[in-house]
Length: 330
Image (cartoon, rainbow, N blue to C red; front, side):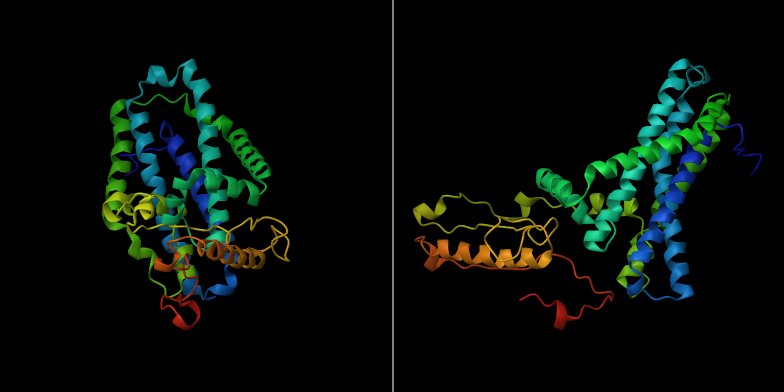
């Protein structure tokens, strides 16, 4: 195996360097999430082995998938281009972008966990549809400028401490057949991961917190993007908003976001200040709903209209079996 693939002296050291940084970052994120959910999980050695063991497999799987594209870039780039002045300029810039994106993902996943107590899922995908609302919500809820500045600093420090390695990697001269071995090995690993690694690996515990901790957020984001697609026009009938004027039945959907941070609402409507906590947001929702019904009563279509109010969100029970006595939504 050592004769087939020799890491030292290979341009693919770029991939192994960033893979190592990624695995370390995923480990510390998983540990931070575990500590935040410590009261919700079983404190057994077996459970910790499951969380970190399955988690490492998912981490490695994502890193393998992510590395596949770059392994082909390193494969086809001739030595002349690899050693050029252009490469020396673009490499640290591109490395910084990768590092910034990676650290940004870690912070984003922490914030997502803080809100939903889960890894990235289809909600993260669906919320991208409402870019303005979500972006404004995040901007109002968190010290965004401070977080982005911290991410920038972390990426810059990492680049500073790895700059000599990157410079040395650019001096390597590697024949095409040797480069092809690395690309072939990564391709085979990616194919094996595709056919052998799936969602069941993170569903081995009866505790949902443990299962989510055993997952990888970046991997789950990609899985949600691939598996959670809904063609609205194919599944929902569409109608004219003014059908009621001509006596035709109509459907109207209204979704509130008041139960999410930053819990802001107009001042002076209720006896609780805006932007403090969920209790105030819920109370304002009750007030707003009362106003909505009161105004709807003035409309000619009110007597023939059915109003359906439902809750939205995931169950946060730590067990797979949902307790309907405390989670039932009428």
